[in-house]
Image (cartoon, rainbow, N blue to C red; front, side, top):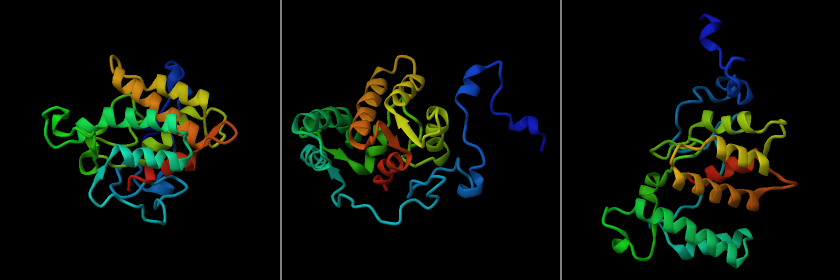
Length: 207
């Protein structure tokens, strides 16, 4: 194949050199652009995690479930309450079966069999619109935003990523991304960096 078909950056468009795409993923992941429905695969973990994740058998996440989970993860009560409110106020309605407003879901439950409807803009596109994991997009998080090659994201990397991923007029997606990634940073950062495997692990619990 002509190498011109494989050029991923050009000096004339500076952002293409500043935010490189991952290369040679086929060696460990095969078709890295093919969405995975059951695993969160990465270059280091091409088969995902060895363990099966616990699931809600009734396929419902209640605000109390989220609050309790956040407390177990180490968030203080105020932060856990804030994130619980942010998560359920934003995602309960899209996940309900009816399009009649929250009157059909007064307790702000999130239904996991329709949780793919909660996908918002301004995201990394690691999950597609059907909730499947796209390894190539996950790897792009690191190649584009981990400037020093430290194997994870600092807070400044996260800020840059959120602003780079901004979609015009998508204020809900923009602020949702801030809430989500601040939560990730508070929960997972060690020495100011969120390790790549910890980021993958957050996606992994979906499966």
